[in-house]
Length: 319
Image (cartoon, rainbow, N blue to C red; front, side):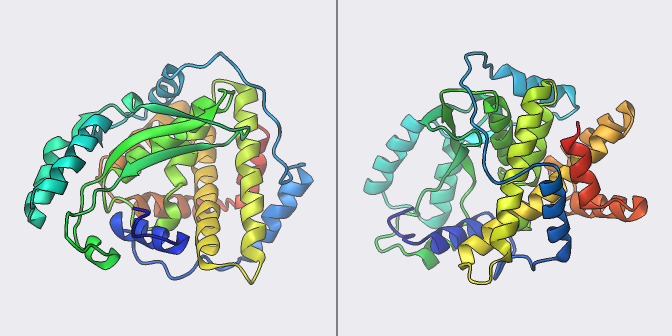
C-alpha cells in the first residue's frame, strides 16, 4: 500500500473507503462534557503518564478466549490467507491478466475461514503496556498503471494476516489480544460499522471483558485506557491539530466512552441480563443489526436512566 499511499491522510482515507465507512471530513466537536471528564480523571488520580509494567511468563492465548466465551460472546470465524499463499498469489498476479471480476474471484478462492484465535501472533519489542496491532491485507488490482482512485473502485474482500503484540509479554498482553480480536469481529464484515469513530468501540469493550478475572490486570487496563482518553481529549481541545490527528483522537474518545458505558451496563445488570446483553452483541457482530443500532440502544439507556459519562468512568475505576 505504501507504494501509492504516501501520507498518513491518504492511508486514513483509503482505510475509510476500503472498509465502507461513511465519509469523514473532520473530527467530533469539542463538548463541555469532556472538560468534566478530565476533572473526574484528575480527581481520581488518572494522569497521562503511563505506568511501567513488568514482564511475565504467565501468559496463555486460551485466557482471553475463555473469558469472552464465559461472558456469552461467541466469536465468529474470520477470513484469512496464509502468508506463503499470499506470496504465491503475488507472483501469479504479476504474470497473469485478471479482469476485475476474475481478480475478486481469485482472492475469494484463496481465503480460508479460521477461528480468530488461530491468527498468527507476531512480536514487537516495546516497553509499551498498550501496544498491539492487527494487520489487514490489501491486494492491488493488477492494473498496469494503478493509482489510488482506481484501486478504490475495486471492492476487495477483507482478510487478515496476523496480530502483533509487545514483547516481552506482560499482564496486559491477553487483553490487548482480545482488543485485536474485537477488530476482527467488526472489520471482517464491510458495512457492519458505517461510523469510523466507532472503530475502537467493540475492541475496547472486549479488552475489559478479557481482564475481568484478574482484578489487578483489569485496573491496569482501565487506567491505561482512561489515560489514553485524557490524552485524546486534550489533543482535541487544541485548535491547530491536523486532519489525521483530529479524526483519530475523535475515534478513541467516542469509542472509549461508548465502551465504558456498555461495560457499566454489563457489570451492573443481573447475571441473566448481562448474558442476554452479550448474546445480543454476538448477534450484532454476526451482521444482524448494524453496529450503530447498538450505539443508539446504549444512548437510549443513558437517557432513560439519567446516566452520565462521568458516572460511568467513576464506577469503572472503582471496580
